[in-house]
Length: 490
Image (cartoon, rainbow, N blue to C red; front, side, top):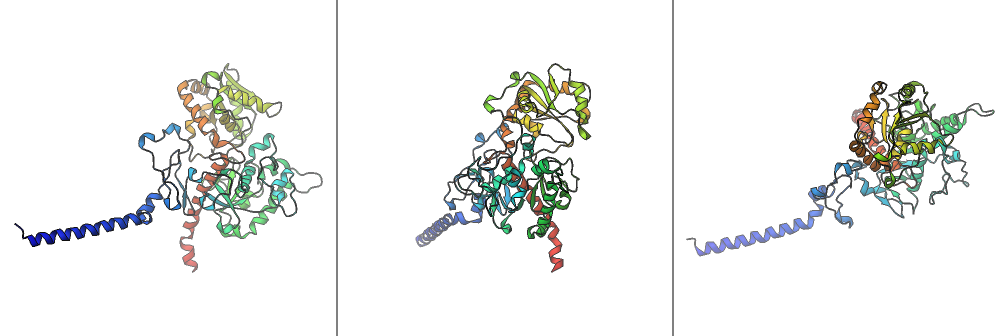
């Protein structure tokens, strides 16, 4: 038996310890939101097709919990399997960037902070015939369709430069609903990327030939002036242009200036007319063409049995370089009863006919032409016609986040020219497998739409996302090169 005095002492000490423990737990609870553990939890982002994430309640936002496993989306229901992007110390995903409504996007929420040079209008909207008032560099974009439209026809397929510029102007314009993907900043020192607003594709298409008494073309003159301008800028000299973004979507655009500006990040349709040193996937962005045919509404997209044509191709048949395969395939396929393979152009209502033909076809051929890519691929996507890609050197937009094998058929050129190979391959694809690709096409087709204002996940938003990922790679390269340079110069 223990003495009663000892038992009383033991009980007293236990009570004191219990009170102290309660106080400690209460203090920890009060400070939990500021603890390093809490910050690591609240900063965690669970990324899937819904872009579900937790927000810090210190800003007054409601906490969102991740779904239980049974609620997680299936793989076939997801659009882009992306990991959050880290830009200037801020982790971001598509839902968090969201779409700002009625007010200018907050810089802290933008995926990219972009400084855009105020180049004279002769480099951009002046090429569309726009003339602003005195000291006015840019047209107002607050009301859609009040600013100069981009010319139609084949010009339109390379209009990437136009849509990106409009989007940056809209980022500083109230009452324009758009994603917080990229926002224009007024100080270049705050920027992640320096944007060069030169409508180079339009300049080539409309002004590359010498006119009248001109000694050089307008296009060549603008390129020379642009090089001189950039080389004299502090922003260019800082990193040799590595943080500059130049759109040169037409394969022949920036033909004279590209070698002098090769350190910049280019937005291109493909690498067909660029050397490996000048353009490559490590630093440059492949952007989609703007499709020429009308998009088919998802609810009205013809199914397998409603598409009577097995395989469709309409376009130029006799091409040079890698496009010579078109002629070979034409003679192999032209007499097959369920194949449409014919010459076609934009003339004589050609675009409308192509759209109708693609919407009636199960598979649409995308064959290399003068360059590895063509607008035909994006016309097929807009028509929900499963693309058959025969172009060994092709580079595809957003391929780091989109698996094209889920909605395209790839055929090596060496196999495609074998008699019977292509027909046997496509006829062997069962309706069930085709339908899966068709369903996926309907889900991803929005990623290839250019529009104003831009929308979350459309072509403009996807390009800014791609630029952000390239920018991170560029930052890594610059930082690695700085390992010894700073210490050795000090």
